[in-house]
Structures are given as C-alpha cells and as structure tokens.
Image (cartoon, rainbow, N blue to C red):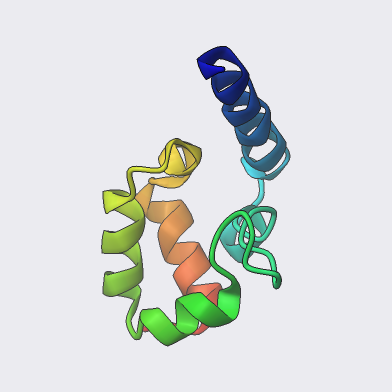
Length: 87
C-alpha cells in the first residue's frame, strides 16, 4: 500500500510540477492551484488567506508539501504574488 501511495505522489508531482516549472508567475502555480481548490488551495482561497506578498512567500517556503519544493525560489514566488496583486 505504501508503494502505491508513493507512486501516486510521484505521478502527481510530475503532473503538477513538470509542465509548469518553466512558466513564470501565477502560470507556474495554476496547474495545482485550480479554481476547484484541488489538489491545492484555489487562487481565491489564497487571496483570502494572504494579504501581502511577504505572507504568501513565507507560507510557500514553509510548506512541507513535496509538490511545492520546485517552486520555493524567491523569483518564482515574487512573480506569483505580483500576478495575484499582492504587495
């Protein structure tokens, strides 16, 4: 069962991270942060939760979700926060 769970996580990571790793700003996030809120919180949910760029970046960097590991660079997070309208 653990093998199946690990395999599913790897497939999900590849699905979400690979196509969007080269995109900039919010485009690199929206593959996982869909309007449906799955597998990650939606744009609207993020805007309700985080009021500043600093808050969003700190939360993203603190995330323990392995799917976020490729997206923890300052330039990517700042571009995403800017696209979301956070200052």
